Length: 192
Image (cartoon, rainbow, N blue to C red; front, side, top):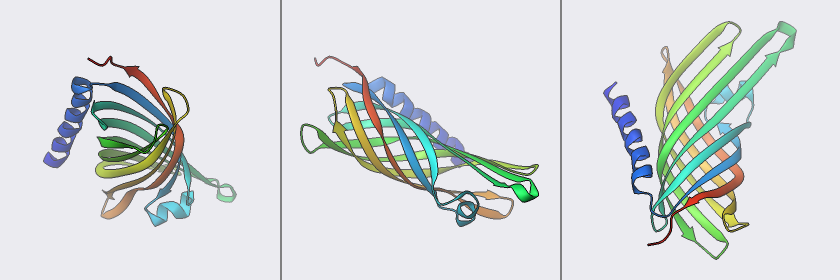
């Protein structure tokens, strides 16, 4: 329990840093993602790839170094109509972390990010419901292409790693994620 409380306080501290020390600009990213789950049993039921929307907010700290937070939503559904059986799954990944941007040209930037996650899941099969949560790690890397002054197209590859225990069985949470989307600078401070 102490481990979860410590990580929870760390997450709150990172969010505080985002708002306290942002110097240059704030931006938001909305992406459509293909998510491939770690757990083989999960993939056998719900499929190899799932659609998962995500929204992310980032605040510049200094130079290309920034803090970010995001919410990734991974829904899934499976039906066996012959036996009237339905399985539904919902996973939420709340992440915060730090990142760095590298400028390759006037239009192209690269970014590298590391973060911690709070993972929540709920699965319902017939009338049986299982829920839980745990913490994990996340790594992102991608490219951004400037379309307009404050609008970018982005492509990112992510690795999410975590596990949780249901009863005496450990299940893998997270997986590989590829995303495409748009990034918009929504506020910009004047240079002093």
